[in-house]
Image 1 (cartoon, rainbow, N blue to C red):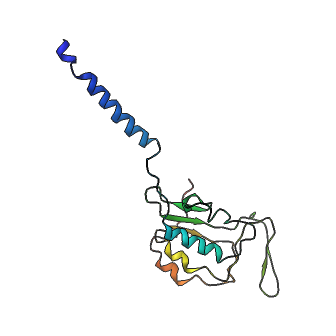
Image 2: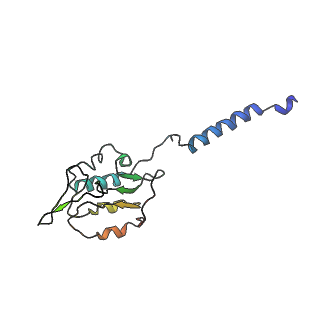
Length: 163
């Protein structure tokens, strides 16, 4: 009977180690390496931030720290660190109106987050893995959808499912 159990102790320890390693990764345990956005994508986002007027600080976290995946309104792929979504929708109650002056300048309430710019900056074409881009409710001087948007091959017309 003793020969039957010989070697099971080391096998059991080995199986436990493998199980703990696999289960840690499956339930979201920390990896030894973390994936962050590329410097090229980080620079593109900072350039976009500087191309718009952001009086209420919608993009205030942009440029803080090296990892743009940690910035507000930026979504990244967990495996690659590539920027896959920008949620830059104007924050305002649905029933809130804004006023248009005679010169077509839009005046927003001071307690809203919104962006104002001449046009959507082409630096966003550096975000080649971008799947979702929401700029709705912002004011880009009635500019047309820029041609570079067509180069974003991963961009989807579908709304992303809530996480």
